[in-house]
Amino acid sequence: MSNGEVLVSLRDLIEAKISENSRRIDTIIDTSREQRQVDRDALAIATAALEKRLDGLNEFRAQLGDQAKSFVTRELHDALAAEVERRVASAQADVDRRFEIDRQAISILQAENSRLQGALAIARFVGFGGFLTALGSIVWIIINSGGKPL
Image (cartoon, rainbow, N blue to C red; front, side):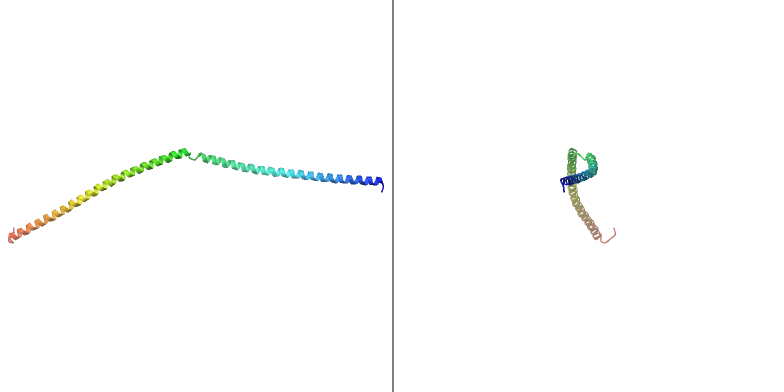
């Protein structure tokens, strides 16, 4: 082999290596471009999904805001609770007062009933005594009249 042939062979070898490396670099660049495009597509899909999710969250937040507008404030709740407690206390006082009035009325009626029961017993006793007196008088008259018709 001569020097010229070695140089040509070496030159061919170097050019072959450069060509092979260029193809590899082109392949890597193409693969990288494809991967970047896949990444861009995935990012676009993820962004769209995230935007959709955020829209849903914003809608939910708006619903919570609308719902919160219908809630009673703590100040109003406390004021209403105090008013209810005041009314309950007032109603309880009214019930207690009426109960005491009714208890006194029942006591008066029971005393009057006892007095009337006593008066009724005396009236019965007097009435029975009067009946016995009248019966005794009739018997006495019959006995003293000697059995003669009056």
